[in-house]
Image (cartoon, rainbow, N blue to C red; front, side):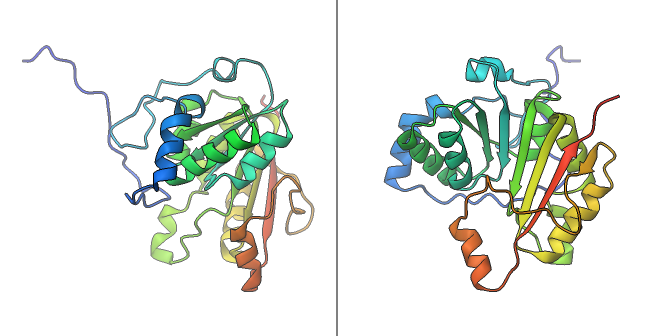
Amino acid sequence: MSDTPADPRRHRDRPVSFVRRSGRMSDGQDRAWERLAPEYLLTVTRDAPATSILPGTAIDPRDVYGRQAALIAEIGSGQGHAIVAAASSRPDDDFLAIEVFRAGLARTMFDADRAGARNLRMVEANAPEVLAHLLPEASLDELWVFFPDPWHKHKHFKRRLVTAEFGDLAARVLKDGGMLRLATDWEEYARWMRDVLDGIPALERAFDGDWSDRFDGRVVTAFERKGARVGRDIRDLAYRRAPRT
């Protein structure tokens, strides 16, 4: 019998909410990545998949940002329009962009550097694993999920980000009273998210009626304008983390 310990890394046993394409970045994105990743990108310990987080390797936000401040994370930050605007206008708060597409992260770094947003960090990783393993419990003041892929075909529903498991993970990382904010331009997915999150005991509706008012901290992106042009209503949802007992 070998004395060599088993490799602790594991492959995922469930589908992820993205398809990670291996398209090349532009020369400008490559330069931005090389120059700015040491400042903006978190170095994380991986499990077997390239975008995974190894269990037991949580960060301490105070060490990452060098201070104690409110921490807001955005899942699926894309090219960073919302989170760069927020970070540059709220220098007393800290922000974390969670994204799997490297070209989007490179653009986010470039824009953050140009805007002087030194309170922003990024992680290239699968969001549920960030919530489960990288972020400590009760470490977030807000968690944003804006326009996640609706995976509108029934056979792809298993790939949707917002599930009961996701709701439990969001509740884990949010501080008591912390906010989960969501938006989508896909009505059926909005209803799905509302039904799922209404069923999470640790999350309470922070809106009356069918939908939340538009979150004024969410900048209008080209993606949102495109949805509006084709007649899609933008639906916002907001949930508050119930007090822990």
